[in-house]
Length: 184
Image (cartoon, rainbow, N blue to C red; front, side, top):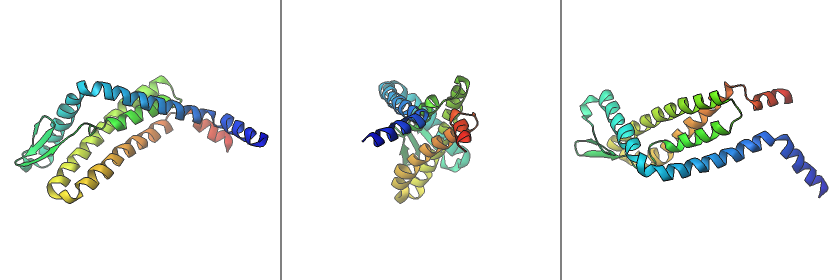
């Protein structure tokens, strides 16, 4: 029993910064979800109607002017065809994950703020790309819509957030990088 206790203490001491990161990340992620849940009633229409539907409509008309796409609230419409952007499809999940990870990561305040701002823009642009892609999939290959929306689209946003986090933190000279260099 004593040997096991020693291993646990050694593990906790060796990986204390990683454990701290994970605990703080989870707490910040849960806090971000709570804040999103509370404010979504007030911000949802701005995020979905103006930032997602309207801008996606402009992108669609730029890429394929013949579509003659219009945005009506959360609906992107072209003739009788329509795509509705629902709550939760505005990319905030990826932003919440990224913000929680960046705030939990051991780096300076300037790096955290820059990462949050740049990362939010990257995720927003990626989500617009996802919405435009889903429009085309639903219109021209509707049998693949569920696959593209539920699996590929959601994983895509989380993947972008993860890749941005790795990129941003690898540029910042973190405590972990120094520790891994010291370990050999």
